[in-house]
Length: 168
Image 1: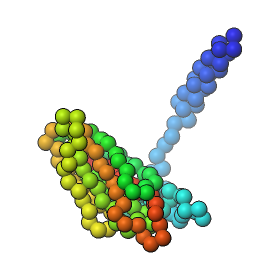
Image 2: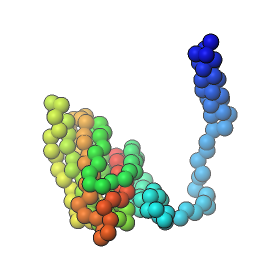
Image 3: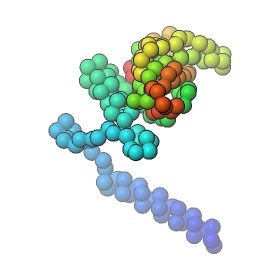
């Protein structure tokens, strides 16, 4: 009886969430929105707002100036290296852009592709700055591994946030 009650409660909650989602759809803010955001860090240094503020101009440039589509945005905490995986498709030119927040002085991107179920090194972009861009035009549809690495932190820091933006 207890299991039946839990099952029915779970079904009710799921159905209720689906009903609300259908009744109150989200709408985009549009071009005339006037919301302003502060991209300051909090006193603990744990806010994602600084990296979001750093990535926003890049997102606007990619979409508004380059007129291409962003297919993935990733934000995360980084101490040394983070890995991200994605299938890249033939016929597209991809940009893989990594940017570090105010704590990261130099960042790089190492690119690998899957060949016979092993990661084959493709290239490393290490511009000596807090952002790095790798451009890839795959000859075949393949899985790729992107390793974002902090080459150097600003003095006094051993961690920070980064954003990885993949577009085509």
